Length: 206
Image 1 (cartoon, rainbow, N blue to C red):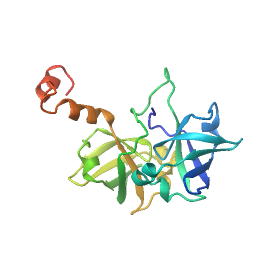
Image 2 (cartoon, rainbow, N blue to C red):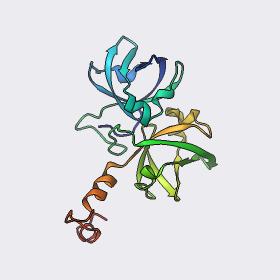
Image 3 (cartoon, one colour):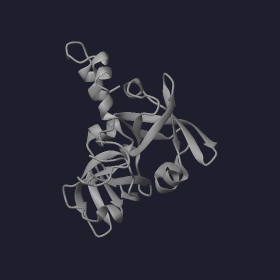
Image 4 (cartoon, rainbow, N blue to C red):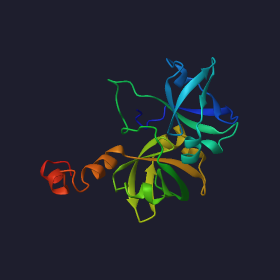
């Protein structure tokens, strides 16, 4: 489980079929073989380590669902270690299980912030709401507006500087993970579940 608060920007050292080796510093502190590290928001298992790199295996399912398969040597990636119980959670609950990818369709400045509009497939859009959470390349962000096929997030300069969002261009593909709570609410409110929108409202959930 992750928080969507990026700890470090790493660099791909090599990307042979089925593996990634990433240069890093901060996320290696305390990391052991078998631990999880989110790479651009995708939860991957550490299978090798040196003093300045870690290696992960990349399954075909990960390649299908994410932008991990497009990475090459020299590319920068967002990195986050799994959260520790008892620590601060500045973002939201992020599983590292990417739902699908989206495409950057516009970038615009708004005072000191940057508005990023992302086109996303229906499987993602069904769970997006204004002021709700979404993870973009593993970064916990708040949706400021949406339409039927896209949503917009606003990022401050600190986020832009300390993540690979500083590198993005129109047309880039990003990993998207929706808020897991939205999925549970949908499942629980299906007919026959015993929980309705009225029940959730009555008990202060919505």
